[in-house]
Image (cartoon, rainbow, N blue to C red; front, side, top):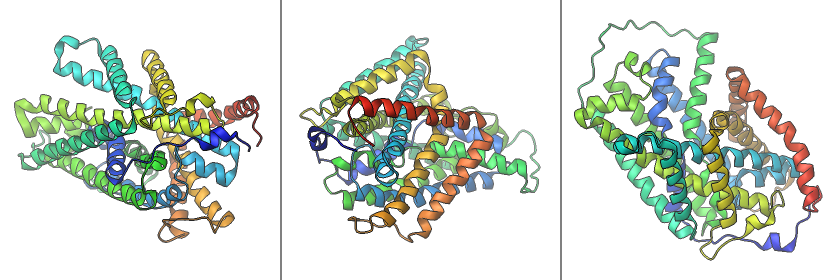
Length: 445
């Protein structure tokens, strides 16, 4: 594939370090999902140990993934993440499809986060009730303007909001473990858990929900081009960030399961709020609202940055308009950021983000599996390529990560057939668009 010289020379500023790397992994992953999903998972799985096991297994899978991603990211520290590796391993169309899948997922996410922020803000400031969407658009505009001047401002905001988020979640956990557990009003008879088809399907559905709360663990890959020392900082960011998330998720779930009966969790759309009411009494609603707002603000800031980097990378490869590669003095790909703002605004106004958001786990497994396959392919095709970090236990750990991802994909396809069909159709439809774009930009395969 040929590109113009101008496109090849466009670079982002190398000003980021390990603290940003960890904060972007933590900030882009831990969101409102961890406050909402425990109830849904409790409704699927029959006992507390099985619930914790599901969270732990998913967390170990993320660690397994992080090792392979660390090799890919340090090998090709370019803006945009996964599509770069997939393109190099499997060709232009594969990279195009993976890149746009990734972009669609990430550009729709801020719409959801802004709506959630509008809801929680209205709970604190009652005069805003009924104006959730307007408040959400206000958040979207503020964080776009905050990130427009440059990456240093964005980095500082991400670090501060991520630290505050972790502190507030630990306050919730501590309060729950120091509280007196709620006694079930109805005696619960625990039945032996029998491994059967229904339970396996339920386990996959639970993992799909949990995996969506881990979505964002690979966020540092989108900023590799801006890291001062990617060979050293990127692997540490992956592992420290992933371990922080896994520990927090287990602590939060353990705290909720400790302080509330399983029946209460199952019947609660916001189990964290019910747990907070036991731990903090009259202060619980204010406490959970503040935690939710800071949790979502941190993830919103991250997701204002991520899709603009993907779009910048896609545009540099000729997969979008060349104007989207323009970078201001502060290091922000400002045209890409503004395009993302407009698209997210549209998603919010027309509520079209909901279906796309529900496709997240299925699309994520497609992109992730393709990334693992690209690592195996590139080790074979380009063995002499410089690799500052190499995945431990290669090729077995990468093959295991790929196998688990494919199993998850099959499980999700069975448990969520609608999303699988939509993803398959999007992939098929993407090829005509690919031919159109490369022809319009004068590119060749």
